[in-house]
Length: 510
Image 1 (tube, rainbow, N blue to C red):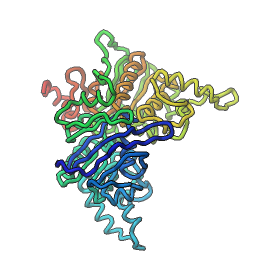
Image 2 (image 1 turned 135 degrees about the vertical axis):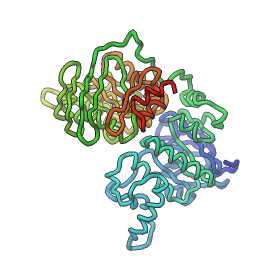
Image 3 (image 1 turned 180 degrees about the vertical axis):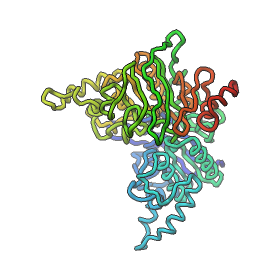
Image 4 (image 1 turned 60 degrees about the vertical axis):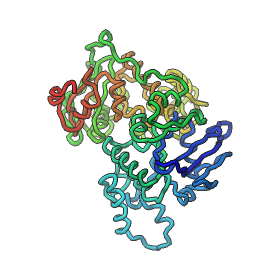
């Protein structure tokens, strides 16, 4: 990193009607640095990045690139100025292959009538080899969310950019994929490329970034060298108050009970998970850990009958649980919150109230079968109050909310059917630290009230801080369980990768 400034933002403001998204913010980016931009959802981070990328125009202020004032009128102009942007939301075309997605902008600008597919695939394979082993000929619709994210990153790497903006790039990546990305980021920085890194994960910021700038409520708060501050300093600057802990108190020995909510025996789909056995006890939060692709989500979906036929026996509060499909699972009080919030968890263009009632419309319908809007809004208002949901009007679309409040709507939808058991898949992915604290407290409160809570998470600190027990999945099988003093990142990763439960016992205290 040098002191040479590539990008300087001075006094930039932006309003959307009466809402002031940015209030005279400042930001600068040095050649060869990785600069974190931190802040809660709604702090103005994405608005500023969209201005830098030419998607939005500022109301006032100045953008300097290499000391020269620039008006960035479009993403194409941003690319001409050497700015590449990997958005948090995946924006690929699912019906063409990986190579065509990576070079779509280049192809669109080409004057050639015919496409050289071999050359296109060779170039795509070269850039992909830095990240992963995805075939350039694979259709994007057949890729997992994490692999689609890697394609987005590969697409940005093909641009001759001097400034690379990464907005929550690891949200859908495995730990291995994330570490590969961090290595690539450092190589790019060593080549003089400046990187803006947006993330809610403090460990990523402090492990990989040189400086951090904090925004709060559309205002610039401070810029500091990462080496000179602590994660707690950043969190407190983000929320404007001191947060003592991210996680609520766990179940105490006095509160613990032997009452079993869920008992799963020999659950298998014969393809993605096999002979799965576990129990969930009243009052506790059970975590499911393991690498992405190990079968964590598939096990939860198997219990709920979301995707496939399964064998084995499942008991819910001593009664057999044998739903034929997800509708019957909901009727039995067992629901699943998807890791893909915007794909499967909520309806972005529908009203908040309509989202909340979506799992069971009979609760808000008249005797003639017509949905009652007042009944919908009454239900949504009650659950919104319980979850501290922040919104304008219940008729507003969910897309108008911050990521944390969108997740609360997804949770409210689960609670609308008065569930007995909730599987929550990556419940705080893409959610800022303030909303994380609230969601963690909500989940603990639900567990204490007698609702069964099972949390699937790729964030090891979340599993350790939130859950009373964590069972680890490896290659579709339960490889072990950790609790108490054994509930550490090292022990979870041992079980998730190469070592089994007996190995864990041999390595206690390490």
